[in-house]
Length: 256
Image (cartoon, rainbow, N blue to C red; front, side, top):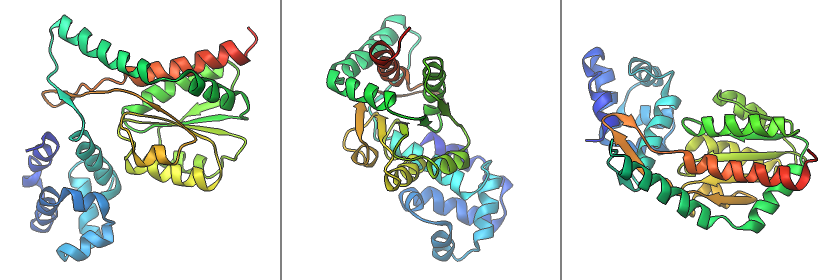
């Protein structure tokens, strides 16, 4: 059984009978839960939406949406190539070198130029990344700010949604996503696309829903890996692409 579901099961004794019913349905029908609204789930298992919300909070989440997002994240990770993390230095460096090499091979100079031009012509740049992708966004936004671009990376999901609703075609949005299928980035990209905001996507999967809506796409090579319960999947290739994009922007458009 997936580590994620094992963690949920360990909380079973804390739940009421109805809440245990909700948990059992989540574990037995994860794909369905990932695509459903809270009202749909409530009707399906004959409980109230309040019961589902209480169950989500009892399991350690702020509500059903956060539980659903985490579930989707784990389902997506199962589709990626996996490796067994090791303390062996040679194995570790070989994996990272392979990820970076494949990522570099996929980068086209004309795409870096287009990305740099989009940054240069923008009024402001907003980064969108949730979970582990946020750290990539934070570092890149900081460097871009020092390079003279008004740039931000925000961690709060609701704040990201509000920002997406206020960007215009004069701005640029950079979305970083491991799978390109996570529900929150897809929600943001739908808003951005409707507002005609240029979108640069950095994703770890090809032919994802995210890249289909993007103006410019950079693919990265990332392998899935867990050390016990700890997610050890690297985000180094994402940092690499953003670093190269910002460096190209500085060298081409910034007077130092």
